[in-house]
Length: 258
Image (cartoon, rainbow, N blue to C red; front, side, top):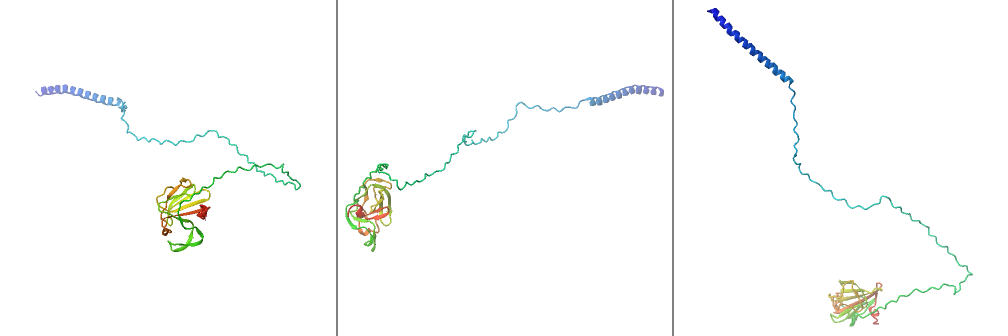
C-alpha cells in the first residue's frame, strides 16, 4: 500500500513538475523578450505643433501722423555768380581861375533861361462873423478882464453876436483840431497851409465840421456860444485868433479891418 501510494505521488508530481518547468521557461522567455524590446525601441520624438493657417489679429496700434514740414524755398544747386561792383574814386575837377586879363564879352556869355514861376493862388479871406468887437487884440500891453477881475494880455478878437449865429471859416484849409478847451470852451482850429492858423473859440458844442475836413473859405464851422470860462462875462461871442508861423497876429489886420 505504501509503495503504491509513493508511485502515484511520484507520477503526479512528475507530471506537474514538467508543466511547472515549462511555465517557468515561458515566463522567463517573455521577460527576456520584453526587456529586449524596450532596448531596441527608438526614443519617442516630440511633435512640434504646426502653426495654424489663421492667426489671431494683433491688437491695434496708435498711428501718429507726422506734421507736414513747412515749405522750403527752392534753391538752385549751382550758385549764381554775382559780379562785385567796381568802386571808382570820385575825382573832382580842378578849379581853374581865369587870368585877370581875360574878359568875356556879353555876347559870348551863355544865356540862362529863368525858371518858370509857379502862380500862387491868392488867399481868399472872409470875416468869420459880423458883430460888435468887445475886446481887441493886445499882446504888448495888459488889458482888464472883467470876467476874472485882473489884467492880462489878449491874443484874439472878441466879436459879440446873438447866440446861435453861424461862424464861418476865414479862409480855405483843413480842420486841424476840434476840442473842448478848459479855458476857451468849444474850439475849432483851421490850418490854411501857408503858415496861417486861425482859431474859433467859445462856440456852441454842436459843430458842423470834424477833424481832418477839407473846407473852403466861408464854410460854416459852428455857432456862437458862451462856453469860454475865462470870457463868460462877455456873454455870447466868438473868440477869433490868428497865428503866423506860430506867432500871434492881430486878427483885425488879417481880416483887413484896420
